[in-house]
Image (cartoon, rainbow, N blue to C red; front, side, top):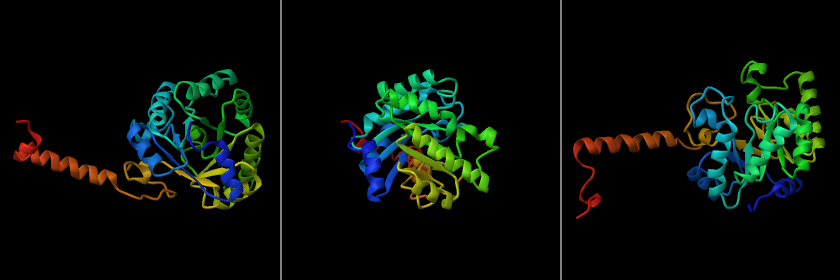
Length: 266
């Protein structure tokens, strides 16, 4: 049982303390994120891009998400683990959505699931909550809808679009979501939604006024270079350091420096 739970999400909002989140997809990095004191770890379907090398998240399967979530859940001691519902794991019907969400808790060891959408998934959220499956909703830029949205674009920029997102936020809260992820929306709109909701908001490209923040771990540590979103802040360049290490390893083999007697048995 993690130390951080959905009750802590709500408590931090009430007390005005920020919630910290990161993604993780495997045991070693999940250990690091947990040891750093991050509140919650999202096993995001973004693994399709940053781990599998895909162009988008759409091909990621439920079995792949369960596989990665198991590794993360095995690693963390304190952070809450949230499994990301992949494309077509919940869109077809509510019973299938509940079964797939349940797999994250039953098979993978997660404590909650995240699901993209607003009004169209209200019934899913209600059914999952009835089955004791906590749900984080996700509105704004929803990567599983990139073809409908025409790419990765900021959402809610017009008055009409902003009004619709505010309505969606209230709908998912009323349906029972314990928190709401806001992605790529104007910070003023995110501030309004955060102030109107009783559940905490988690921002990614939604400005400083959300109740918490999340980024993709590989963006934070410099392991993903295909593109660099405006809302990302890079805190390290792990790729550069890893490349130096591997190049030095190769050079030492070629020069006969490695292995030395220190790395050999006598």
